[in-house]
Structure formats: C-alpha cells, structure tokens
Image (tube, rainbow, N blue to C red; front, top):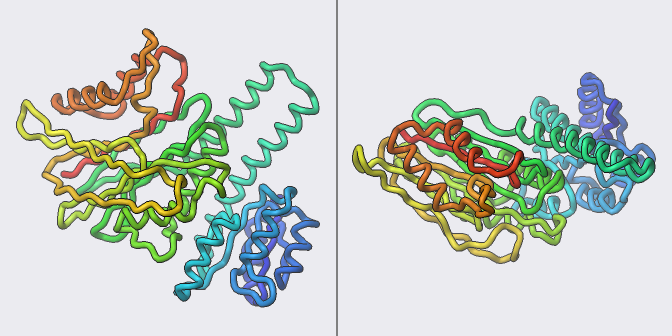
Length: 396
C-alpha cells in the first residue's frame, strides 16, 4: 500500500484529503505544518507528498527544498497545492518550485478527480524509480552475470516505455486529424509529443526530445509533458510558442536537471485564420507539405537556429507564421526518424527522409505504418538506436 503524506495548516483540507485518498486505498498520514511534515517524511518515507504552498513559518517551497536535500527521500513524488489567481510575485515563485524539486502543481480549490489522476501518475513514476533503485542494489549485492543484468534492464526499460506510451495522445478527428507513431529504441530515449485544443480555436502541437538515453531522459520528458498539458508555466500565453519556449528554458536549465537538455518544436494552429505559428528550440525542422498540383508538392521546412532548452538562461526565441492551404499536411518528428544506420555503415539522413515523405505524399498513400515499414527495411540492426517519434497533422 502506497504511503502518502499530506502537509497543510488548514484542518478542513487535511481532513478532506485524508478521507478522499483513504477511499482510494492509500495509507494516509497528515501534518499540520512544515516542520512536522519534514519530520514525518523522514520517519515514514512516503511515496508521495501533497504540501500546501502557503503556510506560516515554513512554506511549501522550503519544505520541498529540504525534502529534496534528503537522499532517502529522493524518489518521493512532490505535489504543491497553489492558490488560484496568485499575485505576480507568487506566480514567479511557482517556477522556483520547479527548481526546488516540485514534480507537480494542483490549484486550490482542489478538483478531486484531477488530484486523484495526478496522484496516480506520481505514484507510477515513483514506482518505476523505486524498482530501478531496487534492481541496482540487487545487482550490486548478488553480482549477477551479464545476461541476467541485460534481461532485468530490458524489462525495466520496457516498463518505462509502456508508461511513456500510455501518456501519448490519441489521434485527433474532425477538421484537423492526426496520426501518431512512437517506436522506443532498445535503450529508451526521451521523446514525447502531444496535440490538444487550448481553446475552441487554437490547437497546440509539439514534440520534444531529451538528450541521452534511459529512464532519466524519459522521466524528464514526461515531466515537461505534464507541465505543458497542465499549463503550469506562470505568466505564459500558451498560444504564443516563443513565450512557451522561454518559460520552459527558465524552468528546465541543465544545471538543475542532471545536465540534460531537450529540443522541442512547438506550434499553434488557429483554425479560423488557418494560420500556424511555431517556434523551434534546436529540434529537427517540421515539414509542411502543400499540393501545388497532381504531380508536385511544395515542401516547407519549419526550422530555426534557436538553442535547445536548458543550454543558456537568457535565450530569446523567435516565432514564425505560415498560412495553411487546404489539404496541407504537417510532419513533426524526432531525429530517430532519419538517423538510421544502414547496412553499408552510412547514416540514412534527413534529406532522404524528406524525399521519402514527398514520394509517398505524391501517391496520396502516406500513412505512417507504411512509412515506418519502409524505414525499418533500411535499418541494419534488430533495434533502433534512438526513439522514433512522428506526428502527422492533416489540415482539411
């Protein structure tokens, strides 16, 4: 049974959260202030902590810092409860919450179904991390042979890949339709993507790729995905891509996230204006294909020279705007889609990838399964070296 610690100086909130989460089958403990909460956390080692941001004496931000400073609580998932409609200074402090180690934010008044979902997601992440730590200790203690180590790691990476896959969006239907493709590599990388309507007119579309491989990269990717989905970047217009990338860059500097950085392509489509505005932080160019005739296709590469997220703290990201013709198609992808090791030892490359997509589009048969099958015939190995992510967006 997962242990959850609730820290809040409001007795009504403590009671409501305790009863609600106990009904979900969790082992709940409560603390009425920050100092008591830290003491209980050190004694109980909870899987997840829910802590109020605004408390007297010791606020939730300081509690978070001190929890993260304790190595024995490193895998504890930390949710901060924030006040809706906070003042500017308090909103800026939410970014400090990310730097202090907070994993998630939930606004007050608390919507219980949202809280339950975030608790479930946090406990899944905690469990994956705990399993990895347990396996590492077991390997050190038992000195298992290399084959056993390989099998265990493959099973854990498969579990992490399944978790990432479970978070990815379902295809869109309607005036804008999508197809999605995610093929994790043997090592598991840091790919994630999403597309969702910000409001009735604006559709956000993005794909990101965290540096490195393994569960660490995957977990950072999932953290960024959760921040974008919950729109928990303060003072940010999520319909303005350059603002989103600037806020992400402020919140996810390499020095605070295990020296990992990530690239991201983020676009917003306005369905009435039929305009696509995008910004690109070091990511491969998206491709916008428009049929100019039955025998030719215009291909626009939507790229930029901006740095990846996390490199430098003061990067000014640029927006670009495109008018979308009828029956245009947008492709967003990670570098795993074209950095394919061929049997002759050469890398396939992005130019050949663009040529393949264009050829399929001319035949009007470019569904992603056929495209993937073609790419895999070029791969000289049993597994891909990197995650392969590809999102196709059709603007009817």
